[in-house]
Length: 176
Image 1: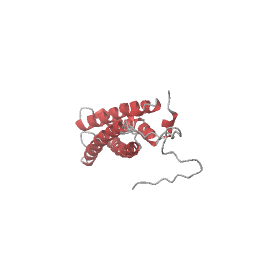
Image 2 (image 1 turned 30 degrees about the vertical axis):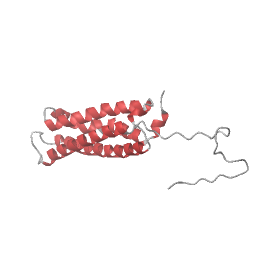
Image 3 (image 1 turned 120 degrees about the horizontal axis):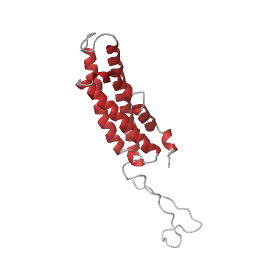
Image 4 (image 1 turned 90 degrees about the vertical axis):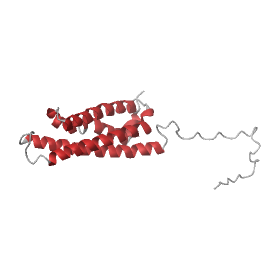
């Protein structure tokens, strides 16, 4: 059964951004031609795995599988927050040490690396936002197996010795 409510959550749309053609792919595609270079390989790893895992999470959310909310999502986001921080930092360092040329060559190679650096940082920021929404889900009890406590049952007048007699008003006293 499809869960249309998932489409109204910001966490769902962050997954779309992370996995879509916007961030996940653009972050690694410009440097894919440099495979064999460890920093480019790490960017390719981060982009491809983020895309695949986020698409899996999107499918689970649309199908109404709520077990991926909360703690599992927080673990995924925390892990990839670290990966994308390392990826963006490594590519940024490569860009700063490039000095206009290198084994990358001149011209469009530098602009491709700049695009990869920019989208790596944007993906990292998207994971920060995802962590924020994961913590909110955890506070609501999502993904912990705890959920909201059940509402107390209505008192039965025949079985309840503490029931208020007819015509009187009950006053609730809260314990501090």
